[in-house]
Image (cartoon, rainbow over all chains, first blue to last red; front, side, top):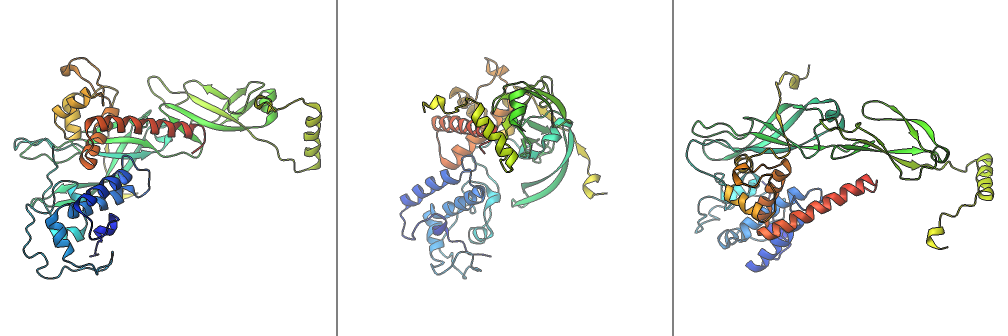
Length: 315
Length: 105
């Protein structure tokens, strides 16, 4: 088991006041909160922070932790000395709230484990339906276009008969309905938390998100594609082949199209009652002037065309 | 044959727009109806339907209620603060999505 330096996690000295601890927590919690933060390891950092605060905010636990001494290094192999907690009383186990499944072995060794008592949650009667559980799953655009079956792995904290929280892993095959959009939910009846006293199991609610695609971007039910075109295709108009998730189609590019022009293929977005659209965004690619012939053509344009793209800038 | 091919395939139901009842929403998020009512009063979520008996919530409401719960629980944010934070987060998400569409990601 590894020693955890709760002061270091919170960026505090061992002499920090309770007020300083609270302020440091608030600041770091905002920084690493999974809803707010875009940092990659935000969730892990937030859990670690929650654990550190759980100990340091409570003068009893903090004093006991301090008594372990300050010579430990974070990550060092750790065994609590005998009677280290003599004279301290940690009421009702270690937790005063928070996510009981989330704390480290180090924490549990020191402060014990407790049953899962989510604060402010509905709890009534013994004959109770299980909690609904939630997960976010990432699918590919093609899964929504055609419909598919995906295998997903879930880790769910569950309470065992002794009231300990255990993380249970399981794997499910899920049917992905055709036309599902990012942000939509799929409900799987009876796949959530177990009920108590003969109550029904809760549901599993899956929030759908899309993996980023090498070609396409999805917004609501619309699909976007950046399409490189030559200057003469954009200028003179052309009929060109365009890839779509359902195979390539012919697209007519109108003459005098500009960089960034959007062309719409109606109804070729995500399928559904009102299917989305497919948008082609033109990206004009310049041929390199890497041969004498190419340079000569550019020079001809320079001489023949009266074109100043900086006219709107007044120069 | 892969072992996962032996698992049964579960077919769920898609939560359509504005289809969740108050009770379903409360159960899905593990919160009291009173708290959801206070979120509606603060305009943090907006159900379809005038009377509480006919309120219907969208999947997006579900996401907002769960975020609101975490903000309150983890950061001690009050309802007005939750409303502000969620609106700003949504705006940020929209701007990021627009950047992505414009190819600046």
